[in-house]
Each structure stands twice: as C-alpha cells, then as structure tokens.
Length: 281
Image (cartoon, rainbow, N blue to C red):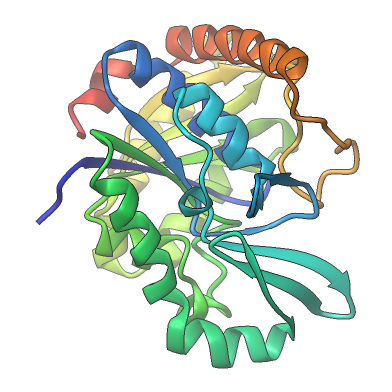
C-alpha cells in the first residue's frame, strides 16, 4: 500500500544526468500542484548541506529547493564521504555513524541494516507528500554489486516506482549503454523501466529517430525525451565531478539557484513528454 505516488530516475552510469532530471521534475510537478519531495537512498559525496543538526548531500538540498519543501535528513538517509583507500565516513539520517572500509560497509552494514534505514526515511516522507521523486545511484547494471545495491532496482521494487532510465549521449555509446543496462537486469526489474531519456544532445534530433525506433525494437522501451546540451549554474552533485565547488547556502545563493532551477525546468519540460510521465504516476 502506497500513501503517495513515486517516480524513480536511474542512469546508465554516474553523471548521466539523474540529479539534473530529478531537480527539473521536482519543479515541474510542484508547478502542477503536487507536494513533492526528492529522495536518494545512498549518496557518495564530499559536498554536503549542513542543517542545524544534520548533513545530507547538497544535491538533495538543491532538489528540495526545487520542490520548495523542507530540507531534512530523510531526503538522503545514507551519505558516504570518501576518505581514500576504500574508506568513507558514513552518515545515517544526517548524523555521523562511523568510518568504514567499503568491504565492511557492504557486507556488514548494507546487508543487515541498509534497506531498513532507507525505507524508514522513505516512509517518513511518504506520509507528508503527494509525490516522491527518487534518484538512483551510479548504474543499476553494476552486476558485481547487485546484492549490495539498496539505491536502484531493489528500492524501485519495494516502493513500487516506475523507472525512467537516463543516458548521456555526449559520451558516445549511449544506445549500447541503454541496451546493455536493460539486458543485464533481471526480467522483473526490466519491467519497471517505463521509458528512456537521452541527455546532453547536440544537433538535429531527426538524426536520432531511427535509433529510437531500433531501441524500441530491441528493448520494448520508448524514448520519452531528449534533453539538449545546456549549461546551468547549478552545483555539481558529487566527488566524481572535477569542477565541483564549495557552495554557501545563504539567501543570495538560494535565489540564484532557484532562478537556475526555473531555467532548467523549462528546458526539460519542453524536451520531454511530460504527459507520458504523468501517466506513470
């Protein structure tokens, strides 16, 4: 039984555009009258938003601004701050828990308490909002880590969330990334994917359309939009991105971020089939 509606964005890789798309969808559905909250089960980032007594990834803080909702620890229940040598500082619901080696984190914490921690925060948000837009982590097709993955398909299944898969076409190989990602998933997870979004496209959209038709033939999945390459002055999400910068969360920067979110949401709204996404809810 689901109290609120859910939608999940997963990517064919890190930096495919999950954070950007979730941010835009939060604003788009807010403007449609939904009470929206973003959610990311687990995030690895050295760039945190610090509340009065908690820390979460700043990406979820920005998404909360897009949703015009309270920034709370439940938006990002597990934050990993990398320390190097496969060790991270682990924060649970915004509070420092302990420093852990990746092996201990996956085999001891994740398998025992990971999903319980995630779902507790998810259910807390579910009681307060009409719509929760969930951001996946990395790729769902990292098959060496499937049994430890609490941020992608297992979470989509437990929250009954339709999934949009986004891929970065600027990198090249995006059609192969989509087909490969889907083919590596279990059938029950393949069925959760309801559409594909291509991100960072330059050029004539008509050139892509034969590829979209072949993609539908190969996977059964339709393309619900192509987001053009556009520069936005929004903070980058995580430590993988080299141009991430420190950000002071003050009124002046909130105003700038809000303005950029408006620009982003307009681009995404004009690039995606929003009605098709609404039908998934």
